[in-house]
Image 1: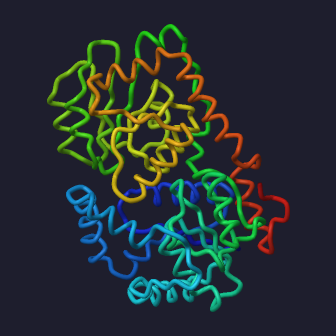
Image 2: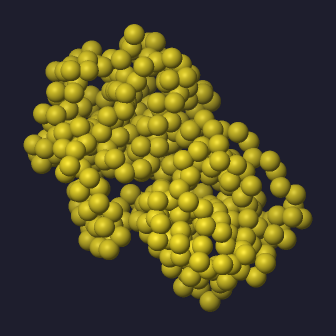
Image 3: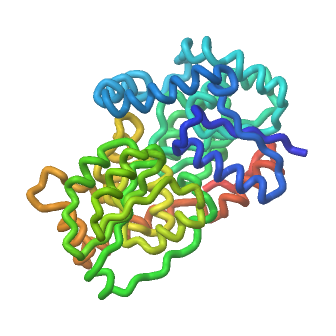
Length: 377
């Protein structure tokens, strides 16, 4: 039996974990045994909880500082010989112990840090295959490259970047950011008349409910043309605040774990207001749901936003405009030209992705560990 490990990072419910869960679902459906491990929790359980809390506080209360540190440490040109000695000091031995104990045949990394560590350790475990599954629309320089066996690229730009950095094209699969199979069903088309007369908008700040979502909610001024459903995640303060507004056009929703329920909300929505997290954006693209951006967390989301705007895959709301947010939404939905241009960009992105099913690519990796030949795109 093939032994498979999946490595996200930290225990908070981020895109790294959502992609790891999607991978695990696909593998379990194929009757493959796999285990998801967070190296931080595995080695330093108590410290991990404190670090997760500190991370959330940092990005929420000191975003400019976090952004500066992130760009300093993670952005810029990838250097083959570059060492991250602090990461190695804290985590390398723990990763080495896990691999020696579990003896995996294949490891999937949904975060840069495990990928970096396994790239360093690969020489000690030559029979182990390692795959990078990128969860943002860019690749920071911490991700391992040289000894990684497979790369699941989110967009063509990243595939081209990896090739320019010396990665063999045969090792790269242009899959987009993997999303759970629940979201791969088609949305029911809306009637044009209804769509232009009334909109049902989802608003989310991610599973933790952090970011500028309070400010956004305060700026809403529903007049009957738009109904808002606020996905509050695990932010109870936000849930209570929205609930206590007692506005018939603004509804608070608690954390939703069910993919089926989330898929239903996507299917009934006209569009979504969100942050540019890689997984949420990818889910919306799969559903061909117009995406409006109100805020970007520092670091990864800032980078995502720049790329997504250039590709016309998101519409950035201007909260400094005299025009209220609701009018900005209605202007988009009442413009056939705006909708057509947005749909063309989504269609182009979807065409660029692999014509092979993501699940089939996983099968190919597992059953043919020596390589997939012409399976790449």
